[in-house]
Length: 234
Image 1 (spheres, rainbow, N blue to C red):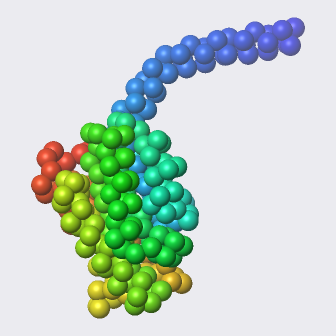
Image 2: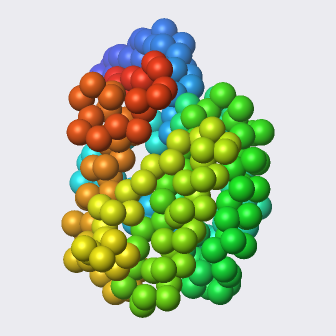
Image 3: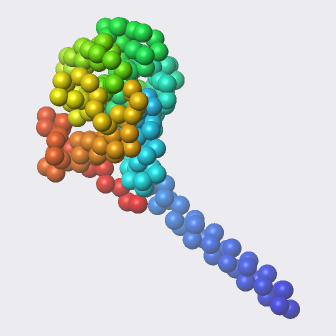
């Protein structure tokens, strides 16, 4: 008798749960769609991959982010592998790539600039309504020659952004020594960021990209209106 009563109670519970789930699913789908339509895709290499991983571990990773950052990525490999993964209705696409082209492929600044131009063109075609943010390449501790090449490439990227009407996000100076070229204590080894450097990069992302121009300490949105509100119910 007790077994029979238990089975009846369990069956009623399952039916009630199914009905509740059926009622809440449309709301869940709607929330996901609303979140998806204002996402931020980050196309980058290991510097951003490690930064996003650190933010996730610290419990501060913004839910609107799409991680398209992979260790070892070059501009060409990112273009070939990831442009098809950028959602058409993404609100913002951040492109932060180029260091591995110097290190792994030994390319000159003008060669890398040409590949980044092609990547931006592919992103524009894939997500025509997105705001594209082109980030400056960060400095290193790998020698004066590499840092001078990075400086030259960043100048090219600034001019490219103006030509293509994309946003140039210049944060190179935030990680450079007083000479304006060499990476400082935010770097570990020659290329990668310390935990403090990753927190700093993510903090800059929050203040410059996510927050509105009225509240951000530094804003890249002055010429763009309206500023996106990425507040998402959690």
